[in-house]
Image 1 (spheres, rainbow, N blue to C red):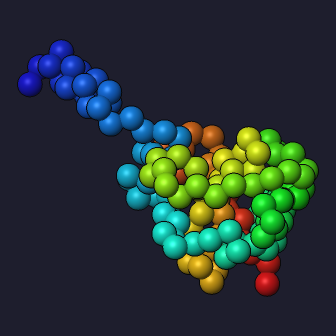
Image 2 (image 1 turned 135 degrees about the horizontal axis):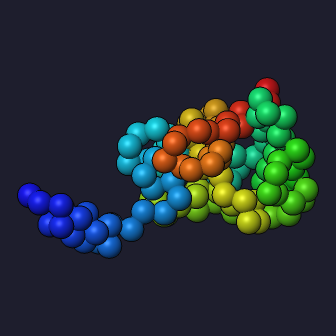
Amino acid sequence: MGRVPRFAAALALSLLVPIAPAGCSRFLGCAPRPPEDITESDLAGVYTSLEGGRIELGEDGRYSASNLPGAREEGTWTLDLDSKSTEDLRLEDLQLWISGNREEPWLYRFEGDPDRCDLIEFHRAR
């Protein structure tokens, strides 16, 4: 197949299969998937990152955060597992993804281009 037909085929495929921020990373296997049955109450708790970020998720849909670039210090959070290619959890305008299991979930976000698979992980404090 020549250059033009390959380009046309790639372009056609990209139009048929739209992929949002974490889409490529999840399809390539470097971004873990969330447990399908996780709930807001499963996620409630305090999460910290090695970079010094801290997120506290309340069962009432409120959060507080510190040392977390791009996030307000307080606000509301939402869980959305229906979308297979976008964020699992949102702190106002900040996108986060979920992995682990119901008993020990952990959160992550991407540092830079999601296709590079540089994850910042937030693990629940014990």
